[in-house]
Length: 283
Image 1 (spheres, rainbow, N blue to C red):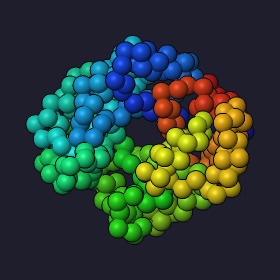
Image 2 (image 1 turned 90 degrees about the vertical axis):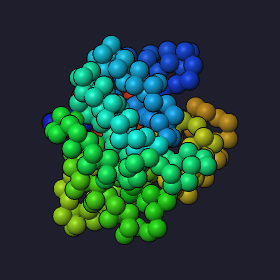
Image 3 (image 1 turned 30 degrees about the vertical axis):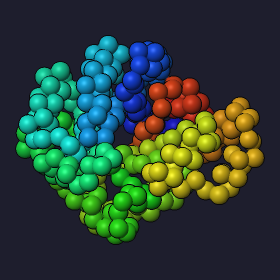
């Protein structure tokens, strides 16, 4: 179903705490690299809690797996000097893309969140420090950021980030294509033409997915939730149904003009590849 040019495809990893976990991440990355994605990204823990692991993972994915890799960078808890040091490290290593986020506040931190408090300030800081060296991604929330006061406020926040110098955006995952199309339509009406790539979460484990989704404000449609509940512990049926649901949504997104897909892999290759194969995307 895919037409040329191929949509942008990217995959996200998180840095692990154990050597075994890191080996699993690298195995998944090598597997996904066979499909020639546009880039990988790697998350950054609350308050920079995974700073060194993120840095090392990014440099390894970019340098050894040979796929351009974008570190997440959050301003919560980091000083400008610390951010400047990281930016210079990444720049010197040849990294050319960054995902710029406010970041989650660590428990008990309150709003004592470093010198920069919001993502738009981080985008401005990166531009001021490094000019056009980095392609800057920002986050978008089609179903509203869980801490936003309301949808209009959240739209205004997105527009502020985009106008601060972002090149493109990646959304929080969702399971309803219409919320993505509505968000993009509202952003365009506000005069912002930044490409917005849907974030895609493959469905592999219902209980984990429900927990994640409640925490980040991603709505699981009732019919999907009920079907997943009905499968109980039948993981094969959960994964087969999940792959079908996500594949159909991705088809709708791409047909409706989404510029690409960004898969939240949870450090696994096969769930994302099952969707890739259903979409018949070119390698």
